[in-house]
Image (cartoon, rainbow, N blue to C red; front, side, top):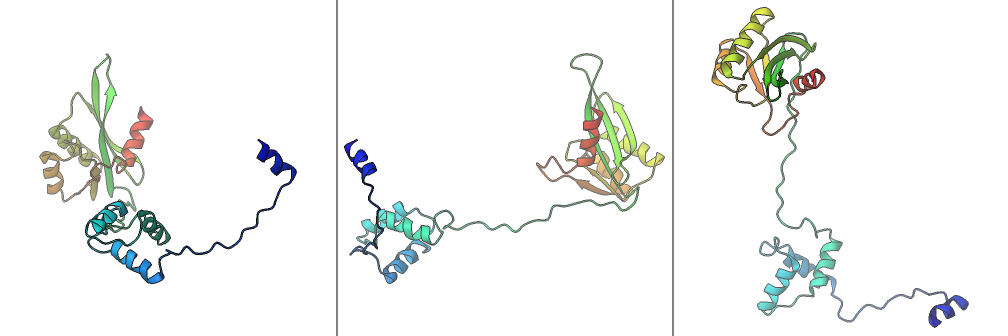
Length: 210
């Protein structure tokens, strides 16, 4: 308290004087040797503490661990110094329709039944160009054969598209569906694995329905 009171009564402005270099400061050549050792193939994937211990066990002392970190921090190598996997940026696949009847999107959703625990499956196919619902059926269950019959009805009523897009459900990738689309020369398109937003038109329609 006495020192604080005295400082308030007679404040002394601090003068920042240049600090002398410590006598054990590394030269630029020694710093280059340390960085070369840290980034060598032998130590590039190890932390400075591990490198320091290994070199000390071999009878070699380059500098302290804190100095190693200081040099790495100056070179901006503290976080990403080791071998990093470089994956090229991949373009997100996109289906584009320039007129009606080119690309159809379809999916199956659950609809609540008349009693608790009872559900129906709604099979819905839309034209992504016009958002027009080209087919809709409700069944008590989901299966590849029902999907095949559903698609036949849609194509007979409307038209055969160039591309049919769906997610990767069991009914969407079933053999009956694949055989039907192959016989009609329709290109099959599926969502990317573990990507839930690759079938947005059907998902948005289901949200509006529910």
